[in-house]
Figure 1 (tube, rainbow, N blue to C red):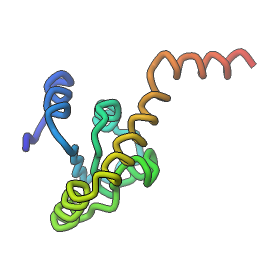
Figure 2 (cartoon, rainbow, N blue to C red; figure 1 turned 30 degrees about the vertical axis):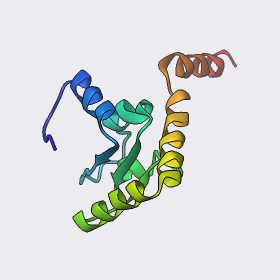
Figure 3 (cartoon, rainbow, N blue to C red; figure 1 turned 45 degrees about the vertical axis):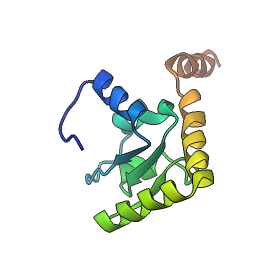
Figure 4 (cartoon, helix red, strand yellow; figure 1 turned 120 degrees about the vertical axis):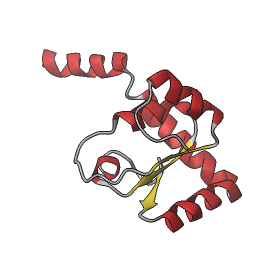
Length: 116
């Protein structure tokens, strides 16, 4: 566990070495998570806290997101380790979302809207 601020390269290196990514944010901000978007393309299952920043951006098929307590996190990690099908479902769902959010795709979509 590494708390605090870290360079993107360092975060991605750790994410690629990890089996599960856990984002236990406690804030109540209603915004997108830059950290989540950094990890979306790693092909890993992600566990997030049930906060507005994650719940507004993720479908249940994209992340394990009912986490409120340490006990909840433990149960979520345990279920992902024990259920490979569920793990793959979450990892693939998040990867699909990442593919639709690359900057070149977002720019093309923005251009389509602006040209109407």
